[in-house]
Image (cartoon, rainbow, N blue to C red; front, side, top):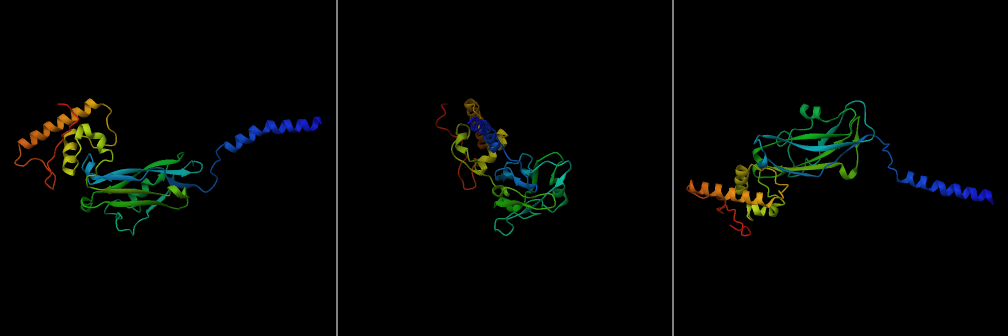
Length: 244
């Protein structure tokens, strides 16, 4: 009886250890592989601060498996070549088969991740269209393709003005109306090129609104025609919720 009681006690004592082992993350033991650790990207040269013909957009390439004590090259390729809105290598972006990109496609020794700059080119066609670059991993001697759900990433880009998704959150600064000419005027007057994060300071937003109104009045007073969109819509920064 004592023997069975002892065995039962040992089983109970070992249960927590077994549970811990089951909850511990398992190390990746397969062939080293790559996946993209970023969301799809939308980009416009319209908001470029330097106004140049090239712009770098970073993607995150992550290596599965143990790190290595030496640099490991990897290979990417364009997956959507045959699609109608596909970006063209050498026209819209620097191709992955160029020396410039080959030198950049490296997971450094001791690292499992790299921020890879994708070089976008400001072709004239981007003034009237948006193109897409869908990037995938091409297996080589160092890496295979990793997580299926993250085996590609997409960059959509153009030179056109893109209405920020959070435009309504800028209401106290810019008013409700939106247009490409208005957007350019805002950038030139305020210097703001990234509209992702709206300041929490409402007084600052109201200050921006006043500054834009002042500059708009100055422009309209010194030109034969008031500032307007291509279709003739007058630019304004009116905000009925701001007491003046």
